[in-house]
Length: 254
Image (cartoon, rainbow, N blue to C red):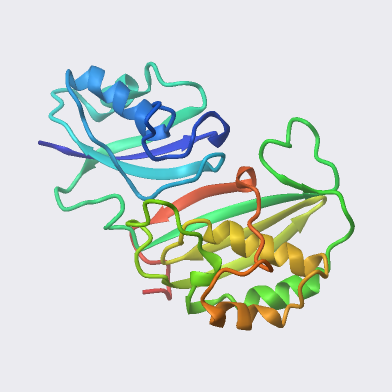
């Protein structure tokens, strides 16, 4: 069987997350349904990780095994053929038999977008609108620095019913940057891995710091507590996007 490595993008509003759902509403369900038609039988795909309902992706990676007598481009076109407009197969190519979308990954990049003020209706599905008041950006940057490095992120994770993929709560975060352009505020997070809701919890807590509801100095004690507390806020899912999965460590990391 030939192994195939695929990169896809999707609008999270149209799916109940990446993972297969009983009602067939996961991104995985739509792709596997299309593959079953191509392969004339069930074909399992394996993603780089889950994204929650409402979370978007520009660079989700998955793999599957299928003998295909034609070109990779023809397989890509066949796979895309009946998928909805909100799910795009960006690239498809042969991969080594040893490649695994999740186990071979060495890091991920997430981007979270906020809008300072009331967002336009065309933007509202993809940003967390913050109309309350200006944020204390300097305090947020000070707080963000405390997340960098290797930590036990238990306090900033959440535990789903099926926690098997959660794994080791110790993760390395090598980038957490804030950039503002006009009313748009972007958080870029890069690390070795992310717990369930970890990226959203980090962003939500930094916004709480920016709104002066939480001192920046509390981040260290929250990390050290290794337990979920009410001060940790989870940002809404629709502002988050999985932008890239690393299969070679970025320079200087790993």
